[in-house]
Image (cartoon, rainbow, N blue to C red):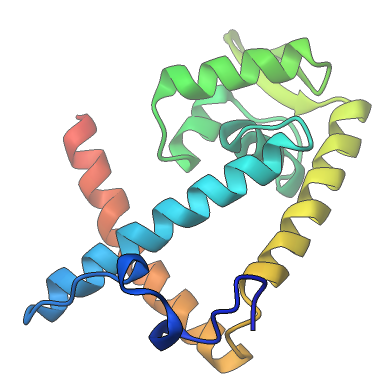
Length: 169
């Protein structure tokens, strides 16, 4: 049971339940959007407590998980967000001393991003914090359910990344 006292979906007050229709595609879609919104807001508030936004976290994650300096366009391709949002977050991370921009030695017209020492520490802190949040938020699912959910979400991600690419062109 969580802190609010809800053991399962059936115990939720009516105003917290989604309206169920006779269309399972619509019901699943609305449920996914609703849960996605809740996770987005929760994660954003929790990240704010360590001085990060979701775009800043995603950039730190990409840089820390990668193998060295990468271009801003590489980051942009891996994050389904508006380019100005990514650019603003990169600038803020640079101003915070977490990221540095350097001229690409192989192409002087482009830049490379990398983490500073302080940025690596912040990324490690943020990743540890996010992992603890993920454990906290996913405790209601066992490992088999998590693998199944991950497989379904991966399939949906491919569909939506394709759709997003199509509308951005």
